[in-house]
Image (cartoon, rainbow, N blue to C red):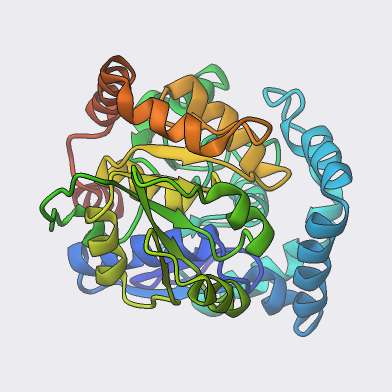
Length: 366
């Protein structure tokens, strides 16, 4: 494919729903525009680009499936994407569905560099690069704490990985360690800012509860004076209204926040965060060095994330069958557990690249 490459970076998430694939792409775009000012950036969801309005149907079906049949989805995901991770195989159905559209997109944009924040476009990019049909630099930016079987590997030039465990996994697959950058999962630069407030006698705990729903939140929230809760309700208006109607002195519902600086300040006001183990939220908490408690993991990726975070020692998994309140208080009352957690956090951060993401992007673009 002979063409003149432009100073353009193409970012490829998957589906329109605002998942971590989009948040991570946005974070890298911000850093790339800061470090390589002449570079233009385009973000294209390959599913809607290829099949238009069908994307809406696919994303709606996906979300419904997870909600209605979580165990079935979890079993299928582990079978197709996680089981025998070291054995890479061609994804012939994906290739048949997306290769021609991918080649058309590349011909239209003529990018100098392609960033894949989802495994499916990564798979197609890798194959085209191996066949000599894609001249652009290819980069995988992993948005979870593991590498599923769909991610392209051999035709990818650079890998931005979330942890030392993922780096070691890729090296075992034959990837040159010089091509692997231990960046963590990229998050917006605002989360590097510290605005720490004075601590209160109560432990302040943030629940990122927008997608958990009223029932799950009410199981988490205890009614004891040792802990005060801030509940980030997201777009879940029903949850926000329900918590407001409780008018409880230890529960502060917070409506949907769109400004990242406000979310950053919220992290700086709390002593711990309860969250589902989604890659981006966890990465934000790790960046802020806020202790993490995981719960209500979605089937598929989040359940695997939870296990990986346990291996790294940087997340506490709450047992839903035990008293949630008691588990949190035990952590705060145990100096030994907190010291071990902080040591694990230090180890995690010390293993990250000393170079900034901007410097890494400048390096690979040149």
